[in-house]
Length: 341
Ligand SMILES: *Cc1c(COP(=O)(O)O)cnc(C)c1O
Image 1 (tube, rainbow, N blue to C red):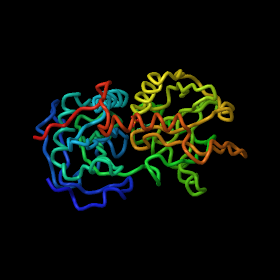
Image 2 (spheres, helix red, strand yellow):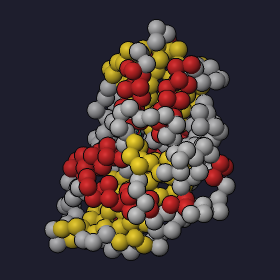
Image 3 (tube, rainbow, N blue to C red):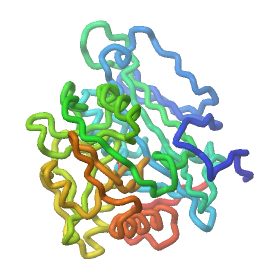
Image 4 (cartoon, rainbow, N blue to C red):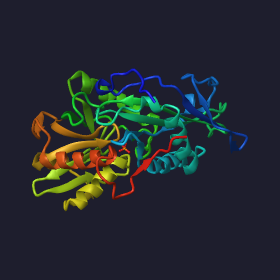
């Protein structure tokens, strides 16, 4: 099939209208028949639960084209599981794993011409989301839900190459997750709560903020949409243990790769004062992949990690991206070819 007429190697991380999106409605106690739709608009009741009381969760995963032209997903089942945990936390109707996986197959197959060609640096981002769509005036969970999945071909989340350096600023005043206490699920409300921190930081030239734990303001939580890791001078991979950060599937994968590279992996509290002693630091997530951190500004101090990616970050990035792009055999069973339907 001919690819869509897009400059795939120059894509930003942004919305592109594709051919179809997937929708399935939960009503009268059961999921209905899914449909693929051309329109990228949803009709929603003005009193829909999600608009007022915030039952809105989402996921994000990527599809890669292999050298043989086949499309493969990366750990999509983990996104399905996490969406169930998110739904549970907000008392929403969960999307069964099999339904989620079938939606990925259907949505990708309906938009094959938008899968960026192998080697161009872009991928097909899949955005599933679930909203409480029922009429709800009193504060209660919705009785009706809408599960939607759309795709967009995307380039790097942060401007530059796939491995561009980012500069962060430590945010000491605003808690992203604390107003809601739901930092460990992928919920829209966490992002809204973070805007007050992110927008001023971007205006000052930073790519993102780095949040501290809400209670003591001493330990690293994560950055806006990615987990944090550091490489110590003696070569350990350290990443925060915290109940208010999102368990990143990318971080989970990189921890595994790091262990298999012989690095010691530590998941524990990381004090801000420890930042100065790190050899490397990075942000990890589906969108960010591994974005090495060039500097972290903490109060009046600029802690520098270098202008180019450090050797450990680079090695982990290459390993991960080789598996995702199908350049090497996947010994972990993380990738799954999406059969043409
Ligand atoms: C999505 C997200 C991440 C990254 O998780 P992945 O599963 O690796 O994509 C990290 N933090 C937050 C707050 C997120 O929303």
